[in-house]
Length: 541
Ligand code: G3H
Figure (cartoon, helix red, strand yellow):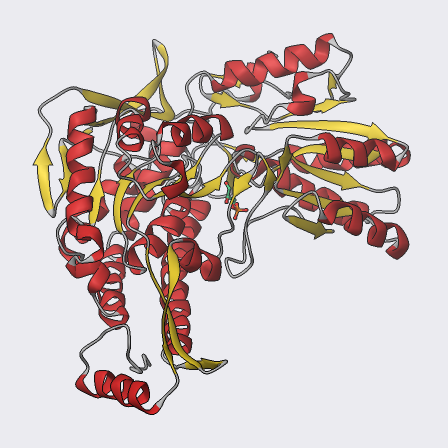
């Protein structure tokens, strides 16, 4: 996997970084947010290194971006205790607050968040290597998600503001919070995916401990003051450090009521097992996936290639929804590969801020070695790298490798590579592909490319009981955020979408009474006196 000459000018010297995108001095973060205050951490710090290197006379050197607190289990527990106090067994100011008022707090936060767009986007590029366009998209999509969540909650609250009458029983049903939520996001969408659980958890009246992802940590810092100022003390607490040390202690305490986690199913299972009363724990989990793209013999080749290029390689394949294995019908495999490789050759490697760049360095230490290991294993078992320069490595950069023909028994056939590796499996009998999906441990999504309505109809029915979303002639993806996002088997627990997340982070409570004159009068008086926030016909516009 040589041919490093393909990447001669990949990493810049410090002077070559355009003024607007220079990082400046390393940011030493010692503060963390607990109980509405910034605590200063006096203990050890974790170094934050960029996936981006500077080219120096001594070789490529990763840029040091700063450091963040490596909190102890005790410090993390103080944050959890602050959230427990703020919830106050459901009697805290936040869980008791009327919905319209909670919405105002979140709107205030959003306004302050928007002011930090430039800072967060720059950190997204430097911390995880996401290109400028996608970093901006991540920020804007997150703001849109917050707006949509507010609107969805208003609609939900409007529906809950009326009374129901069933079998002589008068009732009002509202969604109320569950307690204390622990929210943890992934490094590939350190802002967006974390906020798609954090914001619904907050707005439904839960209190939160939020631990940023393992990479993309400093980028939360510009938002800390907005968090502190926009919510009552203890409602949102932000902790840092090793998950093993901090999160294990939080879960073992039994004080976490909702576990919102995006990561591996292995880590999720281990953490869930630590909770002493698992029946009290609600989980919202986004886990591993190995989404197949299935290219049938009659597929529109141009469309299939375009969708598979973005499906496999946008953000270097580091999306949980990425296409991680392609099954291509034998009769069109050569034509597909030729066109795929042509399109791949047009993807520009470079630094995230460079216009038009889509291939960038990878943030996980050891990732290029892991990917090279998958390639070596596949080569040893008869596959080839069929694109020029595929698998070329320079420091943290791995040039995408298209592996063909891939077959059962190779590691990349089953393992989720989560990176720029494109395994292509030729098939002649669709039953082989069906079996792969049926036997797979994961069941998030898949993509079908073809034209035959009879075959596609049959495959849709076969796969509908296997995965959470079937994409016809399109790559796999999470959005639009109004649609359900979930998975079967080891790929997820629960469903997220703007609509579903509000439900995942709340529970329905019913106030019911026999429908007679005395009770009607009593309920009317409670409403007129405005003595209850729950029993109320207030309507949020
Ligand atoms: O990493 C998983 C993300 O939820 C994928 O979202 O399909 O919009 O890239 P996306």
